[in-house]
Image (cartoon, rainbow, N blue to C red; front, side, top):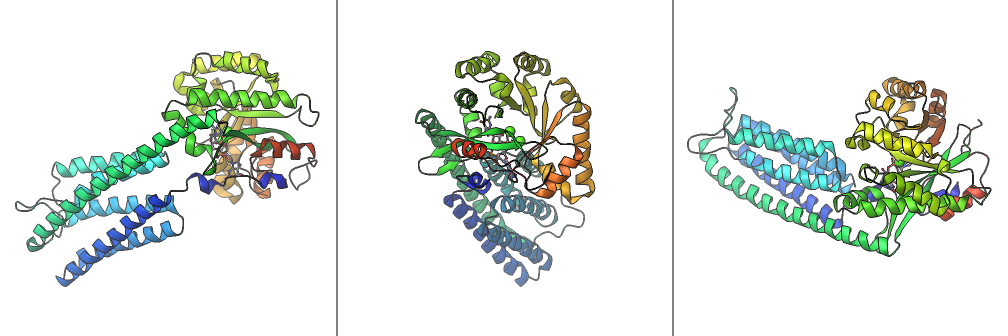
Length: 453
Ligand code: C2E
Ligand code: CA
Ligand code: CA
C-alpha cells in the first residue's frame, strides 16, 4: 500500500518539543552539571569523599540528561532526570544536609521546583507518572519542612561550609522557582494560542480526517478508522495527541466532535454509490465528554440521515473513560444507537482499569487490543500469555477482537493464531488522506498482507 506512506505525520512529530524548550532543558542540565562539578571539587578539597561522590553522581545524571536531549530522547531524559534528582535530594537531605541550630536544611527547597517542572511536563504530555511524581515531591517537601531528623548514620556537612551552602542553595532554588513560573506562563500562553488557532482552523477548514485501513483475517480491506489531523498552515500536519487535549480543556470538543461525526457520515454517504467502497465500515473516535452530551444519540442519527450514511457501516470507538458518566446511562445510550444498526468498539483495551464487569455490562461489539500488548506479543513469555488470555476472554464474552498497532508479519501471524478476527496497523497501511485511501481501496490487491489466508 504505497500511497499509505504519503502525507503521514510521524509519531515523533506529535511530541516534538519546541526549540526553545530543548534550549531551556539543555541549559538547565548544563547549569546543574556546572554546580555539581563545583561542589565535587569543593568537597574533595576538604577531604569529604562521600559528599564529593554524591555530587559526581548528580553531575553524571546532568550530563546523561544533556546527552539524551541532544539525541532527541526528550521524554526519556525528563523521566530519568526527575527520578534521579528526587532521589538525590531525599538522600542528600537525610544523609548530609541535616538541620543544626545555626543552619537550617536547604536541599529540600528544590522539591517544589521539581514538582513545578513535573507539572510543566504534565501539561506537555498527560501522564499518571507526572501526577504521581508531583504528589510525592510535594509530600516530601511538607515532611522535610516539618523537620525530619537526620538518619542515625548521617554524615552532616561540616559547620564551616554550611553558611555558604545555605545562602547559595536558597538563592539558586528561588531563581529556579522564578524560572519555572516563567516557563509555566509560556506554556499557558502556548495553550491559549493553540486554542485560538484551533477555533480558526475549524472555520478555515484546516481539519481533515485521515483514514487507516482495517483488514480481516485474510488481510482483505473491511473498513477504516477515521483519525483527525490538523493541517496547520505553518506547522504542517499536527496529530490529534497534540491538539485534542487543548480542545478538551478549552471547551472546543462540542465543536470538534460533531465535526468529526458529520465528516465521517459524509464520507460513508459518498461511499454508498461506489461498489469498491460501499461495503466498507468507518470507525470514529468519540471522546467521553462528547458521548456524555445530552443529545448525542439524536446528533449521530441526525447526521447519518442528513448525509445518507448507512448506520450499520458506522462504528463508534469509545474508551473506558466513558464510564465516568455512569455505567447504566452509557449502556442505555449505546443500546439506543445499536437498535439503529450502529456498532461499538472498545478502544485501547487493556490500558485502563479494564474491569471485566464493565466489559460484561457494556454492549460493545468489538474490542480493540491496545498496541502496547500487540507489539510485545511475539516476544513470547508473559507478554504472549497475557495477549492470548485477553483475546480468549473477549472471544468467550462473544466480542469481535481487533488487534491494533500491528507493525510486523510476526505480530499479525501470532494474533491471528490467537483468534483475532480484525487487524489494523502500519503493516497493512498508515493513516492517509481520504483521497489516497479511496484510490488505493479502488485498486486494492486481494490482501494487504503478504501472507496467505
Ligand atoms: P487511537 O484511537 O488509539 O488511534 C490509533 C493511533 O495509533 C493513531 O494515532 C494511529 O496513527 C496510530 N497507529 C496506527 N497503527 C499504528 C502502528 O502500527 N504503530 C504505531 N506506532 N502507531 C499506530 P493518531 O492518529 O496520532 O491518534 C492518536 C489518538 O488521538 C487516537 O488514538 C485517538 O484516541 C485520538 N483521536 C484521533 N482522532 C480522533 C477524533 O476524531 N476524535 C477523538 N475524540 N479522538 C481522536
Ligand atoms: Ca481509536
Ligand atoms: Ca486505540
